[in-house]
Length: 354
Image 1: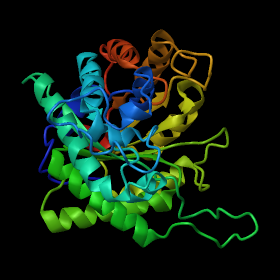
Image 2: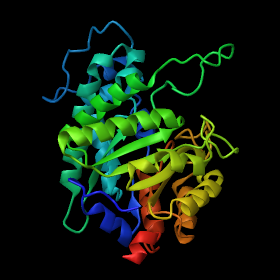
Image 3: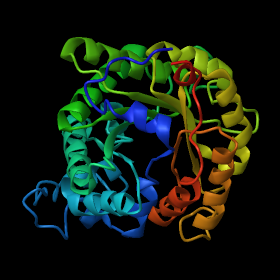
Image 4: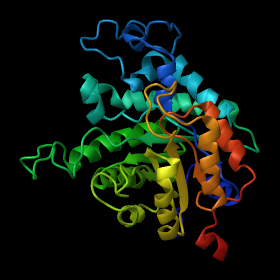
């Protein structure tokens, strides 16, 4: 499968063909370390010109936990997290936009702010990448498109299998708005991630393609699903192989898995993806093991453990992009980068044949 001609990050395929590329770690885990309260989420503690001032001081609903709002109210926090991951060696950093769709923001009564959140988040990541980029090590902004809290494939009512709480068109419109703002803000790559419902992902991919056709832009796409349990299936029921065949039409730069399982339990599914997606780069960014509320990060694995496990993936020739999901920190990313640096990147069929 040949790649499109990209208008941004055009050098990224060649970099991936030469070495393993490092993605950043968890945004939420790092935000939790700041121990922000309701007032801080509304903007208290930051008086910079790029902040929100008193804009949300009297907002009628609770906003604590709305991490995407922090790009508007506490850009200092988001900037600091991006720069820590870049200092740890990340090549790709994700925008703080996992939940920055109108659909997800409805939970906070902030759907009207979704576009602004994406635009500001992309600009923050862009500035951080520009600060750390060198000729030998360019850094790239991955515009993150999360799955939304709703599913187009599964009924929310056990008594009504045909019920749905979202439809394809609503998802498409939300993802189009998000894509447009991310690209305007400076994203180099679009990352459709933590996919638990392939129909949601198809809405995102449809919107992205629609935007490409309309704008003339063509960014690399990374598609990352999440296997939710030991059945080896995503929540909407597909195996990893079926998932790949459902999304490969988008001609992604990379396809992979992230989140739900730690590296140990994720391994057979990355092996499966390696077998079926032989002409596409493979990404993998697992959680730091399984959840543990007693741990400092909320997850079990230390940087040493996670990096050793990810190194095994690399040594087996399974991956081109590695990073961390829930529970990972800049220390995890630095350890992963060091662990995979001496290892050859996974070879692609079309690269070898060229």
